[in-house]
Image: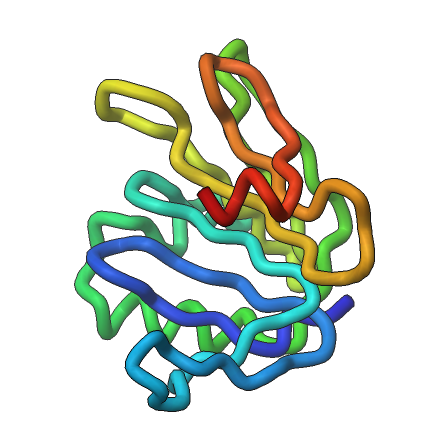
Length: 142
């Protein structure tokens, strides 16, 4: 699947939307500016994007710089997605030779989620208690 929408949420949080996009309606009834993909990867707080020999973007940059990076990522595809480390962090290698890595630097758990809105039994993967966990739709609603 191609990255068809990517957007900067609150602070340095980023959302990567893959596959077919669907409009989202906010709780107040307004249409969101950010359609949701079949698969969404949400990364909060600490992350960086690397090319072969340098860091090209990171969560400490200003919003405009992050938005430009995300715009440049559109159309790329995931080549490899894996978790790394004792506390599962996410590492994503894209077809445009960019690798995106999470690395939480605050107290708690790595703050990322993989959400699959297609018809699957466990559409969401998150880190809880230091381990990778799958959540059902019913668990996500609570």
